[in-house]
Image 1 (cartoon, helix red, strand yellow):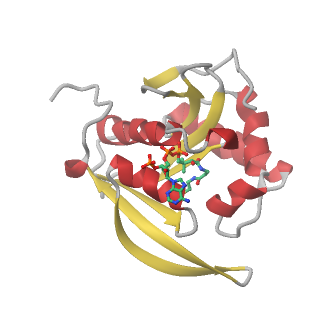
Image 2: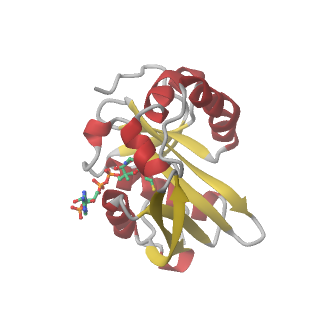
Image 3: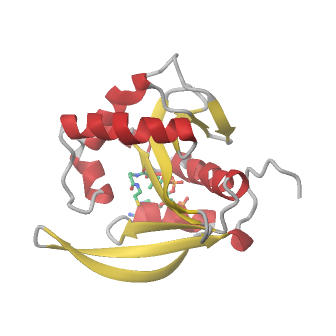
Length: 193
Ligand SMILES: CC(C)(COP(=O)(O)OP(=O)(O)OC[C@H]1O[C@@H](n2cnc3c(N)ncnc32)[C@H](O)[C@@H]1OP(=O)(O)O)[C@@H](O)C(=O)NCCC(=O)NCCS
């Protein structure tokens, strides 16, 4: 079960089901629980292996927390309970090309399939297009993760290609998807146009 976190970080952007907030140091325990989970590693990591607790702590404190302070990574909170339920980010931000790579994990597995990840994705897309004024959001998803693929389709991402990778003798089919700003439906737009 997700744990209610009364000490949530500052609100960045609110959706219907979830909100994006700044990560705070207290989020580390949940983050480590998610990134050491085998089911999550199976859909998230290119070596299919969970991080060790030490690696997950380091990832959170040296990358995710500073990036969240900088505005490119966010804690996902459930609007009903305010509980921390996941984490999301844009990385590889190419300001000249106007592109980035989108990443997301709803870490509380019992909440998968409830629309929360899709709502969070819509919020990040709005951040990417409005705050960062990017021209396109890219992402990569494994073919063995149809839930994520469908979620991204609902937000408007379209497949642009497939590639094959190998990890520990397992073939991975990686699907590249893209949402150009002109194809964005404007959900959670805050700036009037
Ligand atoms: C991917 C993720 C963010 C999606 O968020 P979510 O809240 O679970 O997604 P939603 O409930 O909005 O949508 C899931 C959709 O997939 C569909 N779906 C679920 N399992 C499916 C399957 N096996 N095959 C096809 N579609 C499936 C659902 O029916 C739903 O579509 P619908 O609304 O048209 O019925 C979330 O599940 C998650 O964090 N998963 C673990 C980490 C992960 O996969 N991250 C992404 C890595 S690229």
